[in-house]
Image 1: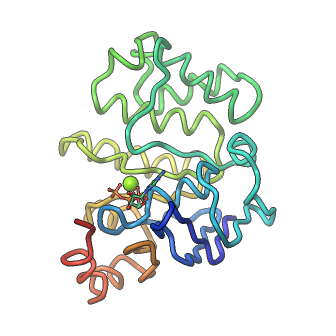
Image 2: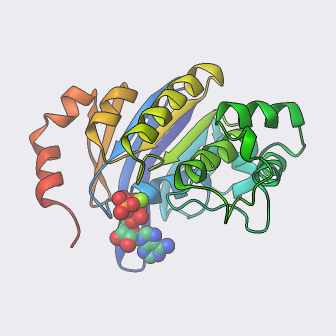
Amino acid sequence: MLQLKNISVRFGGLTALDNVTFAVGTHDVVGLVGPNGAGKTTLFNAISGLVSPSSGEITFDGVDVIRSPLYQRARMGIGRTFQVPQPMHELSVMQNLIVAQRFGTGKVDQNKIDEILEFTSLTAKSERNAATELALTELKALEVAKALATNPKLLLLDEVFAGLETTGKRHFMTMLKDLHRKFSVGIVIIEHDIETISNLCQRVAVLNFGELIAEGTPDEVFSNPAVIKSYTGGAHA
Ligand SMILES: Nc1ncnc2c1ncn2[C@@H]1O[C@H](COP(=O)(O)OP(=O)(O)OP(=O)(O)O)[C@@H](O)[C@H]1O
Ligand SMILES: [Mg+2]
């Protein structure tokens, strides 16, 4: 479904992604890990169209999307969440989903929105102001709901577990497993917690200083000495 070939992203003198080749199949659940500043969010930004790579290729369902604007990639089926939840201010939870659905599909399907609200346990909060009246768990659920409203084939989840308590985390984990089954989407999930990644993903890719240094099953990757070293000594200051 998604294929990245030799993708590099530079910000001035900084190489945030260095020649990254990476693929995601239709039903894959892939973990993306690496120390702070390794380039994980930048990889999502390159895939979804928020940053332009300086070189390399990105195809989605066989179509070259490297110059496609954000909304076009969304309409093709690339959905994402943001590391810092970004609800649209002044709008209710429901209105946030309607805007996301229009962005991703060009139309409004209220039944689908109700289904997503239910699925993300936000039905009772649908009229609340998204920016000021939600708890962190609900804000995180709204991020996922907004991404789902765009009707993705591929869902990019950027640290949706961060800051959640154990119960919230467990609840989210179950939701993501159901989501993968129910909406038949491929998922790439950025997450620091090894246990969470091992529980959810069949495959893990590791970025360090912009380079993809390992890829394999969670067991393979988390016992790889280069990966362990990147976690203990590879992080940016
Ligand atoms: N828009 C930007 N302009 C300049 N530098 C950027 C920009 N976005 C990211 N960077 C830099 O690129 C590098 C990779 O950042 P990125 O946010 O992708 O890391 P990350 O792996 O997501 O880290 P974290 O785990 O902290 O979220 C960092 O050094 C960061 O400061
Ligand atoms: Mg990040």
